[in-house]
Structure formats: C-alpha cells, structure tokens
Amino acid sequence: MPHPEFLPIQWKSTYLELLDQRILPGKKEFLKLSSAEETIVAIREMAVRGAPAIAITGVFGLTLGAKSQSGVANPEDIETLLSSVLESRPTAVNLSYAILEAKKRIQGNSGWESITKIWETYGLEMMRDDLAANKALGENGVSLFPKDQKEFHIITHCNTGALATAGHGTALGVIRSLRDAGKKVVVYADETRPFLQGSRLTAFEMMEEGIECYIITDGMSGWLMNHRKIDAVLVGCDRVAANGDTANKIGTYNLGIVAKEHGVPFYVCATKDSFDLNLKTGEEIPIEMRKESEVTQFDFLKGSDGKYLFPEGKTSPVGARALNPSFDVTKAHLIKNFITEFGCFVPAEISLRLKNV
Ligand code: MRU
Image (cartoon, rainbow, N blue to C red; front, side):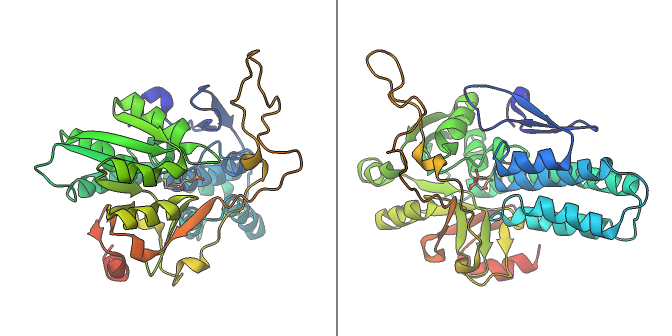
C-alpha cells in the first residue's frame, strides 16, 4: 500500500478525492471532484491514470453524476452519463467492463437516489476487489522466480503500482511481493516518455518503499541487458486480446523485442479485467492518440545563468510536428507468461484460463 498520505483515490461520500498524478513528485495536491464532468476531465487529463484506477474513478464519476440528480431517472440521461464516462479514455478495457457492470447493476431501479447508492457500493467493492486481486497476483508472480536466488534485477515500464490501482499494484505488486518474501530487488524503471510515469511515479513509489531503483531512459534497456544480468521484465497492461497481443504504455513493444533478443523473460501482469476476448488480435485494440505538445515540450535544461534554456518548456523547433500514440501492442510471441490473480500461464492458454474465472 502507498503511504496513507499518497492514497490515489479516496471516496468521501459527497465528493471524490484524487491525488493529482500530473504534478507528482514535485507537489502533493489532492483534487476534490464533485461532478461527473470534473471526473471525466481528471481521467482524460491523467490526474488519475493506470487501467484499474481509471475504472474505479469512472464508477465514482457515475456516482457523482447520479448524486447531482433527483427524482426518477430518464433512461436517456443514464445512457448519456454512462457513455460520457466511457469515452474519457479508450484503450484500457477495465473502464468498459466497469461501465457495463454499472449499467447491469441498476436494472430495475428508476430513482437517482437508489442508482447513486448502487454505484457508490460498486465503486467501493471495486477498490476492495482490486487490492485483493493485486495481492494474489503478486504472490503468483513470486512463484516464477527461483526460490534459491536471493537477488533479482528487474526492468519495468510506466507505473503499475499503488498509484495505478487500488493499492499494491500489478507489476510493481510482484516487486513488492518479492521484497516481502525476503528477496533483494533492484528495479530499473523506464522513464516512459512522454508522460514520465516511470521517472515521476515508479521511482517515487520505489523510493517510498526503500526498494533500490534506477531510472533509465526508454532507449537504455538494450544496453542494460547487454551489460548487466537482468532476471525479468515485468510490465502491466491495458487490454489483452484473445491471442495474447497486449496493449500497454507506448514503448512496451520495444522492450519486449529487446528482451526476446537477450533471452530475458518478459512477463505481463494482468488482472481478469484486462482481458478482452471479443478481440481476436491486438490489431483491433483502440489506441489513444494524445496531444503533440506532450512530446514537443519539456522543461529541464538550464543555461549557465540558471535560467531555463527553453522558457516555455519547448525542446523542439516552434511548429515541429510530433506523433503521440499513448499505447502500443506487444505481440503475443514476445510474452513468456501472463501473471494474474488466478495463476500464471502462456498466451495460448488465455481462453481456457478465462473460462474458469
Ligand atoms: O497512460 P497511463 O498512465 O494510464 O498508462 C498506464 C499503463 O500503461 C499501465 O501499464 C497499465 O494501465 C497497467 S496499471 C496496473
């Protein structure tokens, strides 16, 4: 669990409190959201991010939307509310499942008051279930690492920790569980351009936990695998197609190829809500395109006078164009195992394993 001061999502009955992940680690500020609209903006602008956290926040957004109404609910208004939250971010399938389930749970209820209660209960239930799933996933992940080895060096990408979930995390959950099992873990956190979830959030979480962590830029993993013994790559996911192709933060695919080249096991950590068996392959996964400015602006270079070299944070010529796909798809053949709360298995086993959960 993160330090109580850093809990990313807190439901406060009349409003939702979100730790603003856009400004971490520099500033620790909480957003107080009291409407569905504000919640949608917070998801879209990534004040909250990470597939499970987005889904939980989405359900509390629905709750706030329902709470602001009274009397009998018009079915069209319910549909509008559900679809506006659904559209906030497209790639992670967790949010789609949450919206479907939220719709199912209110069948036969026509009053906004009872709908509010049902969605509030569902949001709180999701938080409990996600935490339990992460802990089980973490334990299952530990079983893949040799028992007699005391120290593991692991590369991870993006942030899949307590900040991206209801607590513990998926890929970072396995790392936490290895540490809890008495192992020394050394983490190499891909910086994860352009939003810097690795350097800002993963490094922050690892330091909070006292786990040794080195930030590397996204292009350094090949060098690292050549020069140090890396035991595994652990990543999270936003949507897994039936054949095992996996959408995750942009750069994951490159990491998968480099890992394969070096014979380093590449593990995808996923809870059951990450699998989308309606999609045959990763080609069908919708990939979110984000603003070009996330790629073209960056403010870290200072001149000898101590002033920023690029006062507006621009590190590219004015008018330069950029591409910003926020996710990519790692092909199934690059993945050694999925690590889930219901066991570890190879991509070819997905359909069979999902039948029993
Ligand atoms: O754009 P983000 O920060 O929401 O992307 C997050 C990721 O890609 C994570 O790896 C994924 O959601 C899994 S989080 C347990």
